[in-house]
Image 1 (spheres, helix red, strand yellow):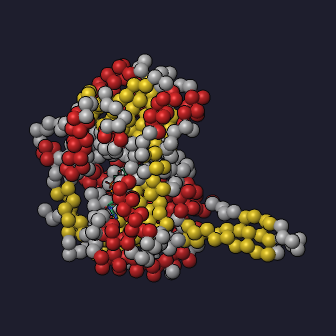
Image 2 (cartoon, helix red, strand yellow; image 1 turned 90 degrees about the horizontal axis):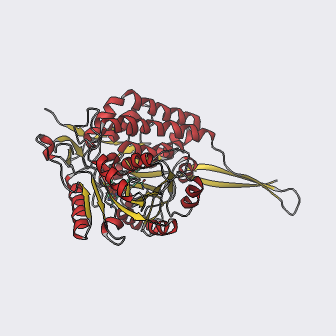
Image 3 (cartoon, protein in one colour; image 1 turned 90 degrees about the vertical axis):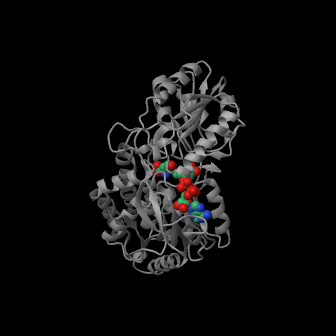
Length: 486
Ligand code: NAD
Ligand code: 6OD
């Protein structure tokens, strides 16, 4: 059987490289494909192609033409929907339902949404008085920033790549993008779709490779990159920020989280359980918004822990193609080791293991995959590592609380600030508590319900800036004010 090679896409051509690395299926450890790592020379070539294209046709063609092309890209994803789903599942092992209902449709929707938004967005205009009485008129225009490096993670590969690409392209920028080394599949398919949609050569370039001492580092260090938009770990963000400081590049960062859910005594119990199951275990806990800290009012604590345990134990770690699987593997053996170390540390620190904590037993080739059991702990103090550090796996710790102000303080006492979920039937409380939480996104009686127009991002170690709707268009364009004396 011939093994597929994922190539780089530079200046309109698909190019391999001297160094190929393996792309491993986390379901069973099998080899899916080989990936062409882009070296320094290829990074230079891609950036040069983008620089040339940015002074050429892309920013010069009309906005409505650009938006038509974005919609063509969305249609191109739809036309190859099954291939995209298959590639996303192969790279991540996630359930068919997740890839076909969330990852791929959102990947296409990001292009349609930003195409529509870019066509309707206005800029500011201010009339001002002047001493001669004639006044002046100020108006702002949006210009492209130039060449943008887009660096994406592996957890929602197509969704998070296109979430950045679509607004950046809509605003007339040229792109050099790097998907995660773990998930090259849908990014390569996207390059084919972009090519076929008629995007001029050099406007979009795709490079495969790793981070440090590899493609990611060469790209973020490149002096002809004007802005970096990055989603990934907080520590990586910090390193990219250090490297980007020299040229004072613009940065947009979506980073890690240690998100909490609060279940108040007046919550709809079934809705809170169902929502917490989703927020803890979706995508095997590998969504930046996933809940890892659950605070339950003391009057419900025992009942909640028992019910969550019961439901967690019914999760099905099957092969992804069927409808039955609802919990996939972790992305890699390396990540599994990190997650299992977190479980073991929690036990060493005195945590009470309610369920899981280990590796599921399989009698087929899944034995070689990166699986862990859905896991719940109780009994740990706020200073322990399971309560302070992001795990990014299918695990939560449940703590009881008695008073609203106490749980708000506890929830805020973390170095992260991405998302929170509150479960209560009292909407006054919903409003009151939400505004006191030090996070970028609060959900009340739901989780991961997304309106793409809303600001999305985190505070503290969880990120810099906001994406979504106008916030994305603002980041991906340079506003220039023009002041005309009348
Ligand atoms: P990661 O930081 O390891 O890697 C992300 C990307 O950065 C990859 O493409 C990687 O190759 C690249 N990279 C790594 N080091 C680099 C360097 N020094 N220079 C340039 N590029 C480099 O993150 P991950 O493991 O892929 O993703 C999981 C993390 O992402 C979790 O912490 C999760 O919370 C976070 N995340 C955050 C959001 C959000 O919206 N806030 C969304 C998804 C994931
Ligand atoms: O829904 C989105 O737009 C988004 N950026 C989700 C991020 C999820 C993190 O894993």
